[in-house]
Length: 183
Ligand code: AMP
Image 1 (cartoon, rainbow, N blue to C red):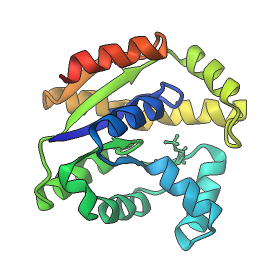
Image 2: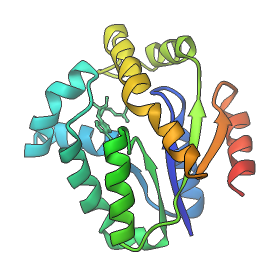
Image 3: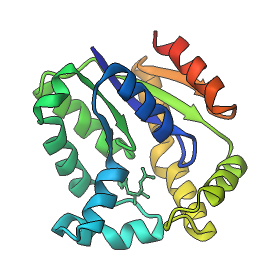
């Protein structure tokens, strides 16, 4: 049973690594960013509510994302495990998740922290060129990451659930290190 949470700044390579592992284990890769971007594209109520936050590089309010994750984790395909990518992003979301996993009888998750220095992340994201990847928005997303999300590193480390991987190496090297720490 594999239940993994990926932490790390935007551009750390979380999405790529999480997706590859999920394919390998045949478990769902649950990316809150992907779900929100799809909702935005379809202009659903959730998408319309989330848009202004996403455009600015701010976090979408906890409650909206929490409801979305609860609905997703209740789907039948999650019984064999999952990889969460982009959630939780605040301490509040982390305690919500902890209670939710207890309630759904899905506890026992591990957390991977993929860390990369800011200047490397900015360069990578500018190269990627997604619509919400202008330099101003990227810098804002990083600030938000450091202030809102990075505290989760201590949060999970104090619960002894944290695995650390150096994200500042080639994709293949990250994959290899990741395989080693989660085996
Ligand atoms: P990502 O693809 O994970 O970088 O997410 C893109 C954007 O979606 C973020 O900049 C946020 O605006 C929003 N988002 C994704 N996940 C969350 C979350 N867990 N909490 C709040 N906002 C989120």
